[in-house]
Length: 305
Image (tube, rainbow, N blue to C red):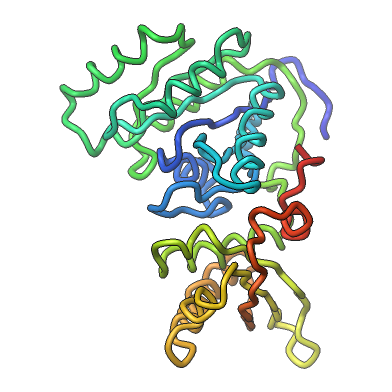
């Protein structure tokens, strides 16, 4: 951590909102590379993912939190706890909403959570590229009467519209502080975590129904190939809850698992800057989302939050 200078600003910004409002898309846009997985399926983000944006005069540490939803199992309870806890430890809160959707119960619940907080709250209306400009005024007014937001900023995280303006506005609210992370560091998560998320993302894209939310990915081993120093070998296990799910993830004659591996390998190679040999297995761990021991084993540790 570098020393404070008189003009340098730094701070932590929580991105909170309902599932599938575009929090991970925004984070990846700002950081300039994929550190949070993206999916059209809700409740994709399960852990608190920090992305670091370092500028000449500031450093912004964004925290992408799981979408607020009604939990149906211990994993869901864990995700909600992570989101709530971040509200107490940041310098600014970004409440992100989907311009395509009206205000819902999830949004109302988040607004209740925000009541009484002294931390500045921005309303960030995302996906403005999906609506007519005339609709935006109505959306903003609907939220404006419900909470005294410090700022209201419409953006398109996917296309980048108004994102630079949002970053400049955030910078004005940050306190003077140190550079917490080196300038070239973009996340506080280890490579193992990012690699497991990249593999999980591919399964999310290629499966449907109950499969996406029933999987976890465990990285068993990462090591440089002994015979080829330009090759990194990654071994990972995809955990599912039922035997039927195992068959679906593997696919006919291993076709789906092979496609997961092919797509994930490309992203992992970009992350590591090296050729990658990826080996994937699928294992059944019955009802793991409701078992605290399995949640801890798969990286969902409450004591870290």
